[in-house]
Image (cartoon, rainbow, N blue to C red):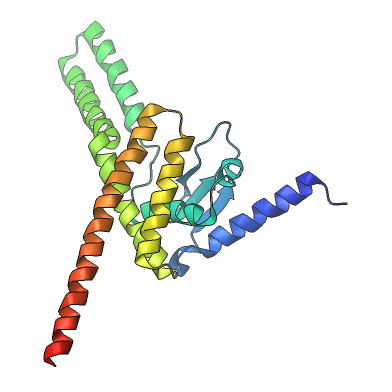
Length: 220
């Protein structure tokens, strides 16, 4: 008999292969999809693992709790982040800030004005970059943009526009229910509200286009 562990491993490999097939063809050579090995990981995230190489990492245990359409749209959201070049990066800013602060303290001791100014400048530049990277408004806008592109990717893979919106909305609602941290939950709620506004605009546009088409038929 096949053990539970073997069956589970096969199921996970099958899901990873399925997700790989949901990558746009132009990304399949440099984006990989793997199950995460971290302790208490986020559900899904992406990171650079080398030059021109990106890995999308998934907590497959939590992933199995979601419906297929929900998984697809959350996956395409991460794909969109890669396409938009907004994936988080371990930059030089924290190291530069630490070096700058250490240098500033040291130069205060030896009283070298020029080196003190250089150290403070390094602190200022790295601190500003960290602020930009962690700015809540900016990260939310990046998430909204990725949601819009995820909708477009879904239609590229055969979803109707209404079903793409419904599936992503359902996925965000599921994430709200599964997320205990209030701050992260608020981000999902903000994305859901933005998605509803976008869906209403898309619906109004389709209705307007249909009315114009009907009008042209009448006068043709």
